[in-house]
Image (cartoon, rainbow, N blue to C red; front, side):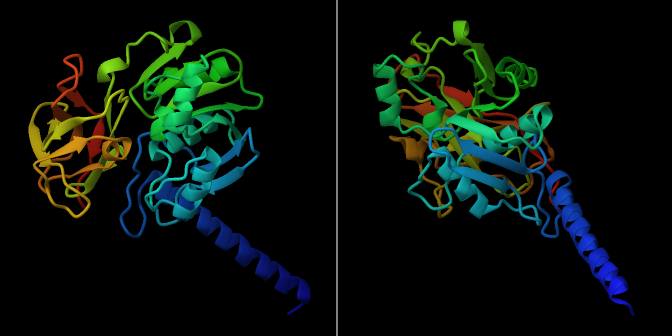
Length: 321
């Protein structure tokens, strides 16, 4: 066999491997068809690749968010933490996954393949307080402090256009103060511009705007659901042991808050930001497929203006394999 034929054979083999790898990744991302039964965890997911640059220090990360088997790319998530300026004390903590997939989804819709330029990522609470004292546009309960928000721009994309694309989907928090930069967060769905931001209005004081988030959008029966409470202005209250699981078309289930060892406490004290993002329940094994919201009740509220209970984002329970 001639050297030219051997070269063509090797080239075909390489191209086939690349095609197969891409096909497996696409399946894991969009269909949850991985070998270990992973499911598409979010309602909005882009192509799974995201490129970020910190506009202040130049740190970069170009990451495939998922491995080929559909699991999260932990090494890549750590690289993203660094670009966001997030250094968690607990192993495995990272920037909100829902936020990252929203960034991927909307950047693919408006500027596929382009780098997202971060103006503000994670914000330490002390630094957020300093910004407020300086009169900067920093909210008392900023989701930047919960690792759930980002201010960014994309070269060549108008900020107002990007804001409008995101606002129309009603899936998250999105703000635009003019120019090319927008704010995006994975908290309560809402939108604002400079004239309607109400940053200094006091509306978020006394825990009036707290919000309950699940880590993912999709779960299977029997899985652990990690919960976080954002928008907290004042800590020092309790979360009731029982969490209601309310089906959108009627019906109710319940689950107990559990600690990392799976033990159900009588209730949970929310005395700091770590406690607020370390909540979890285990879904009942028998829960039916459908759309649900979780409802959490509070006691020892420091203010009567604080809600007695709050509901989460919409989640989907899919059939167990």
